[in-house]
Length: 100
Image (tube, rainbow, N blue to C red; front, side):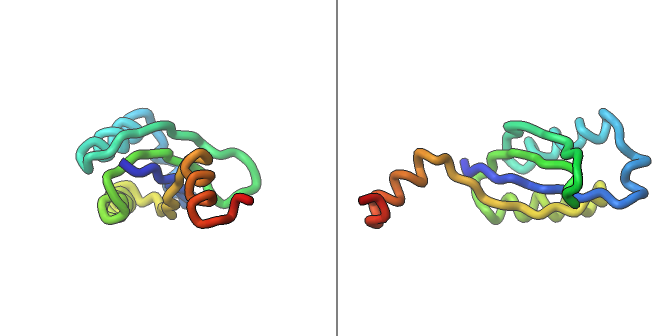
């Protein structure tokens, strides 16, 4: 499984539909696509993003399918970023000679 940070943006209309039921829909869809939710956060502040899902999915293609399906179903636009742990990054950096 690979970890992805999925940043979601609501439009004004989407705020009217906020509910615990919609959160349950997201959780069910993640499972339907073979994924696992690590965390869900609402972002408060100046950024454009309103929501972040931290999820594990088998691959980029599955994450893309999920993202498109979720946008189609709920109207929340997502931008997804693959993530690796710092430990994995350190291993890669050492393998390619960045660590001296």
